[in-house]
Length: 555
Image (tube, rainbow, N blue to C red; front, side, top):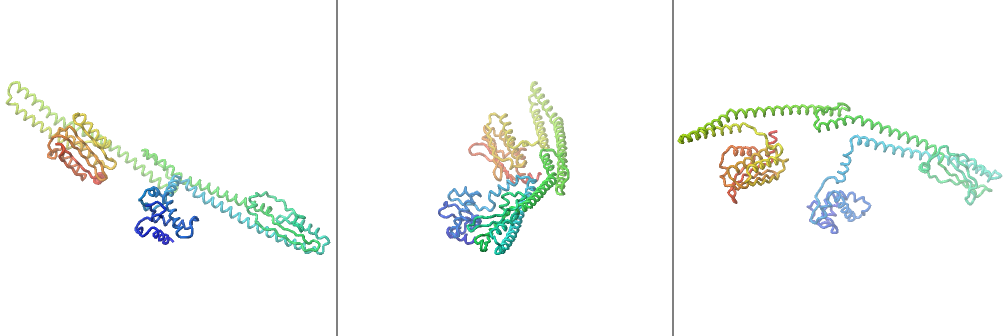
């Protein structure tokens, strides 16, 4: 059938659709819209049994297309079908309604799910038990009434056979009818030739009151039995026997009531026991949820009792081990922070000692030499001044070398602890304060979540060194800083309109550090002159993949 439907659609659509994923609609539908072939074939199975479709193949195919469009609208195809020239995508999956139902079921608690999974079979068992007991009661009542009606027929036939020897047949018939008084199942009536009731027996009054709905439900539809009297003086009379289920329904009602009540009590007890068992078994989960909440809020001292089934006890044991591990890690972090603070204090003390022992004497020597130059100038010994100036230069050169040594030993605190964007903005604010004559233009278009810490540190140091070089050597009136992030790389560009010499020709400490940082992240750096002005531009490109590898290697 599926192959036939597919062939019919291909004949209606033309040979041009054999290699396409969708089957076009008929000309009466929207032009250019397509329905996935898989959805068409899937819905055609439903259309085969749909009462709205006919037995002829074209009608079933047309109805399949309508069902496919409705199914596509529910699954998200409707939006694409409203635009001309667009086709539906081939989607293999469940409709959105199924996902919504899964989300609704996902919001139910585990306890509620378990209780419902037991309550539904119990409810179905109760309904099935009621139906089974009712069916058995109906069969019992039918058999009992049929047997009673057969006994009544025999009694009537026996009485009619004795009428020819009777002097008053009608009175004998009336006495025969009265013999049925007090009968539980059969009501007898004497009918005249016109069908009117001449005499009628009385049933035994029911002891148990039966609801009318129950009597009508189990009461069998047994037709009355008419027996014609053939006696000479009683010709035309007839006896009608009718089965009445009232008394038998009373007996069955008691049995039915007791059986249903017992079954309902059993189901309620089973549900109550299930609820108690589920609550008891899942009680440790409440403690686990509370412990996880405390762990999430930073309280690593949370512990849970290892109780319940073996699986939950193992889960609680694993939770306690995890909490103990987190507590140990937190204590270790505190110790590391304390050690770091101690090391920082020691480094500051070493730096102060170096400055006092090395820089202090140099500054004192500079002060003494400067005073000597002043004295020589006063006494007119200007020929000795150049020698003192050379001494000052030597002291300054030695001091610079010592400062570079100190800078080489220091590990500066990261300036991007609060983020790359605030760090760059603070750097620009620093230079704006110290160089108000220079216009600084900043453009930041990055997603910091995609950049590792090593890449952020490199970007900041590149901007810092490029700004310092531009301010010190180019004497610009405008500096532009642009940091843009793409899908695979981050580009940093710092340009100025100054008139300094190429920065690439310089081999200073800052430029060397810049190149090393960029090379460590597999990036590239270029320094080029601007054609529109006499300024220079530093461009650094850092691939994000390399930054990720560096971050993983450092971790």
